[in-house]
Image (tube, rainbow, N blue to C red; front, side):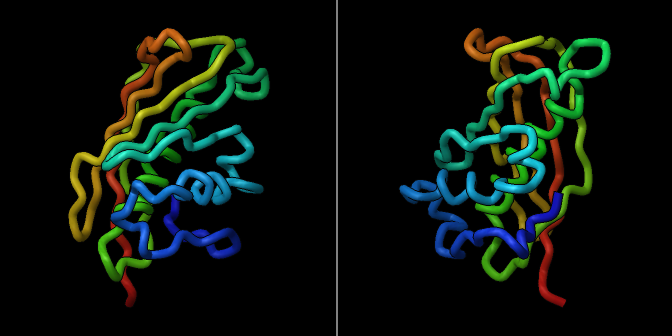
Length: 157
């Protein structure tokens, strides 16, 4: 996932570290319109300090042919959550980011309802960021997947 959104709304650099900005949730949600996040039904619920809370509704289109939740749905939710978070925490002067590594452990599934994700910044350095995310079933809160990704911070050439 790239941190650049050339055709979509841009977040002002003033919110890079000001995650309590009143309009940040709306601006982040606008980024996904007409793109992959919108396709899967991804939405940002809250941004607090170094944590992004997101969700999506499970629909038949997001299931695998065997009728179970497709792993790519869970990865899409978790990676997008971490990517949106990375966008907020770019160091001053950085131009974007890209995912360089990701890992997921699947420990449960759902066939219907909603998925929630809580993504948390573990390391926010000048060249990399590391994010952890937990995907859970709504409303039970049962963990379905544990996810970790590393983002490379991009700089002007």
